[in-house]
Image (cartoon, rainbow, N blue to C red; front, side, top):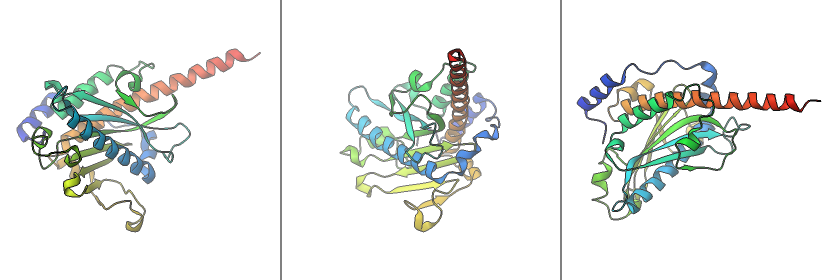
Length: 266
């Protein structure tokens, strides 16, 4: 898998600086919602499947990068995401600057952090290439990454090995709230579309209630996993940057509404 070479990962670590700072506790509510986690994961599963199809169709002309980004939102009056988590997604063309996932996430983090204090910044407009239907007041809740690199080979290797896009596997990673992380491996049709999920927080109240089998992991286990550790670290940092930008956007919108309401008073 791209991004698991120990020496290269160490080089990124040394160049990237300290790990993410602590995030205010106001975002903790997302960590406690099983429905939201499941909805976010299903949205990324769909994205990963569509990503595989798009990359397969474009592999000989305007090749698509192996990685895609999803900013996850819920409606302003739907804190638990019961009407579904919505996504603003980004796919890139395949080129050297999009060939290394940790460095891609690191560069995006710097770009979003540079928008600090810009209440008009909305990544759905500035970054995304496709956005689900949602209102302006939708609230950002998390970040997902779709990857066509898996434990069985990189996208470059897989596209020369399979004969149809339905056999292309993928990897999904999701971060929500302050410390929720989910990783999933999606197999292709030739491997019965097997879906293997590991999460730091429960996706169901009991085994009988689970939408699919999944395993529990600790944040430390994921951090120590060479296949996921550094990617999740920079996903989390980028997630916090997006979250802070979204808080600034919503607060500015609220202030504008208050000013407008005041002006309408007789």
